[in-house]
Length: 590
Image (cartoon, rainbow, N blue to C red; front, side, top):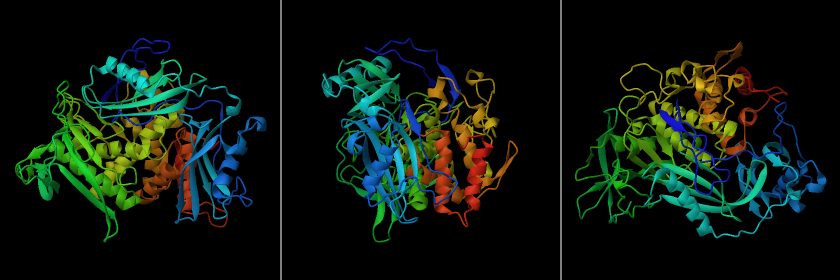
């Protein structure tokens, strides 16, 4: 896949206006994600101690779970004079008991006088005695001494209007936004805290995007911005069995719906997996067609979730659009993977509907998750074929949806690289699960849709051998993707190398599953089945918005210890494999 990454885009009222940077073209899988922004500065990193499963970081001493979490986090603020009273710096946002290990997991964000701080977050794990045994994330120092405005001078509607003006200065008039969300947040930009409205705008036409605008709530200035990247009334319908050829020419069977009055079938269906026999998990699946119309307004649809796009319809039970059939059935297969293997009920674990739109743009060589749905371009037929045809592409984009509902990794620098890597890892794993393939040959991304007329070119990225994929020397002298930490890209392009450096963690995942020797370190593989459980646990229990490579290592080790406990004070074979894999890619323990 080819994407254009811009170092800066000039927008109306932008603080310290920057000229648009020269576009640099790189091969990068499925570019857009869901979280953007910088990592909070002036913070101390803390984490689980991998030396012993019995390590206690903080004793409960009669406190409740919530009290011990806040007390522990407050203890990480070095200057006692700056500690907020009663743990007010930290707000608990989720709690989850893990019956498998008898542990309890709490996620928090930081706040200032009740206003959340963008990009902050911690994950704290308690044992059966409510003692803290593991913790991930960063704690901001001297926050209580900071002087930050907390009263907005402009309205939320004003901030949305300013953000819309910025979006449309980049892509042209937007007649219908897929969605606009707004929240008041504190944003640290270049060392200074700002009270801002964070506006998130999702678009499909005239260009796909998931725009994040930080609008100063006291002045209306745009502090920072990023681009993260249906409705004729649907009458009463009944489920029907349908079929169609996908992009690869394979006949697929699936559920659609039929309108008895018009006789038309629509590509609305369901993914049925997980739950119990008496009460299975049913996730709605809808696929729409953008018809490559950049400026033509979409028909307003009152479909189940209200997204924009033309209906994919037929008067028979045969759907003749291969891209739509592929997107639809791949969504079902990826959902089945997360249901079967991880017991996860859709992307948000609450049964959210799965929305896909195909035929985005004209010859668009990309696919994206825009915070609301999956978007697929048709490719130009030379560099890319239809991106809807790659199941690992679908798995990659849908995993971004899982990430945004769990660790919510910030899409910048090392945390952004971990974000992209996890999307790659589960993209590959979901495809292998569907195909029933355990061969190392399946550890490539996008091999089915990349350069369709060149056989055996290896795809967009390789998890098994990252260095085999060429890369522009604009990203350093290597000329290929890095496969160890010391060779990581440290520049500003590609949001600090989110796609480039993802290959480093990809290699660790491959080594954990398949084994091998890497830079003189021998790693014994522990199978794909164990690997996927370790990485899923790391994502859902330990990683936080600001997690870097070091915390990725610690989270994977802690997850291995949880699932495969130490015996007689010694790490299990599985834990040793994880340690060896991260040693092999050069990610330091401390």
